[in-house]
Image (cartoon, rainbow, N blue to C red; front, top):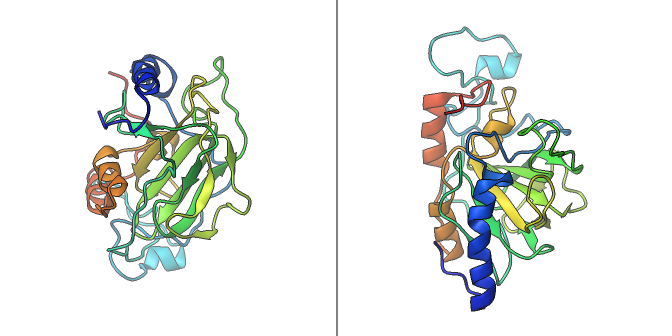
Length: 258
């Protein structure tokens, strides 16, 4: 558990909330969770974590690609991801905590007061945006769990997703360029946040054209990178995300329940 730089009573209360979230809502084992709808189409000119430098014929002409037994990586535009970009902790607040693990799938819940700024992790382009909270306990569990949410397709070829926001900043729309540290919205408790103010944070490949909430919610563990960024470091997730993408491609459905 990351040390909580807040008062003892409040830190203890937050620690008690972690198992509550694991038991219901954001991280219920065996139940697809934590992502949002994509009412705005993702931009088409973004970086890919695994594509070779330079545009491919399929990317430039729109011609279909041959199918094979290997994971399908052709759904993303070809581009060369940038290395050495600055990376910023996604919540700008003095009182913030998170757990190194998350129930059911890789992701992290970052606890902070509602209204604290959520910022872009790195330079990139806005991908999916959901400004409407469509989540209902009686409805499908998965597609709308994130409530208000936004993602940034980083110039490093990685998608950074945040959900449960209270609001999304004006001008944050699909295709808009943002810089590291730019305000995207505020911490909230929309979707299945169980009335607890926090940001669900996920890291994944863009997977344009084959996208789903089960990818967007997170495929690699964010905590090691959050640990670095919080201390002013610049650990980059691009290599790990690219390795996951080479192995799995862009799955067309969520993993089978265990």
